[in-house]
Image (cartoon, rainbow, N blue to C red; front, side, top):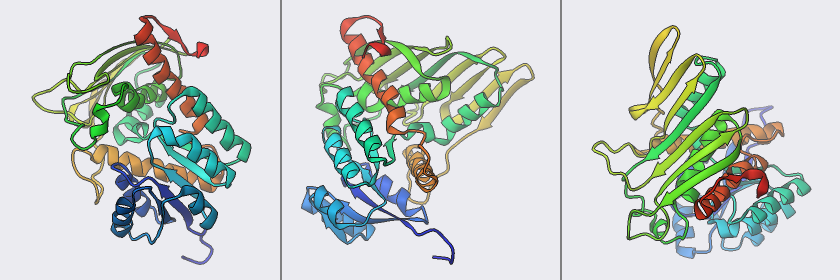
Length: 347
């Protein structure tokens, strides 16, 4: 460490599963962060993960790890049913918290987690990474620069026939699937680009007979300020040229239109004509296609977390902010079940 430089942030990872590999690579790319401890209930997986990333402090009990290690933050990469207990545990130890999405199984749990972090005065961020993809950031920048004027309509779309069940077989078994796993990202992107939503109308369908939950969802959002958006997602839509894992965006503004399409091409048509820009994400050294878009967003959100932690400011996807996204997920399921529009202020 150079003289005068801030000491490296000491972090721990809880949960050494499928996606946590990306998080560990992201942390390794940040020069002022060191993951000093790992925790997982599976001893074989814990050992393999520790060897892969050179972490020798390994625990099967999170309470013991938090009591033993000197930590600046903990990265919770477990499944949602465990999130509340782990967040509250970290808060009691005064350790800042990153938690995988979805934040919790219920809104009651999610609100309790946010309150626990606030009561302990520790930063709490949800790992909602899709808004940190380079193409999505480019869309946001174009809107903020006024290149299409004030938006009045939008669409966020993720339609694919990709076999996500091969690497994550548990996705096929849950009563809830595409809104909770994928749609939550798309809903957050819609909020990020067009503002908070007041109400949602949703329709869902299960097309694949081999799974338990829904694999198609179409949602209509009423945003603050009168903007309307459509958020649609499908894992039952095979295509000649598979776009996975690209998110497509369409936004109509008072002075032009914006389209984020296939192969990360951003088309902006306004009063001065049409411009097409390549907003492809970089391929990080540890990343692989086609996942590189998501993998790069993991690095971006973790870099943002470090900046927030250093500055003591609230991260963009804080627990409190993410309550708005998670409320949309809960409202979408309620709308689909009841066949009517659900206002978020009724939840």
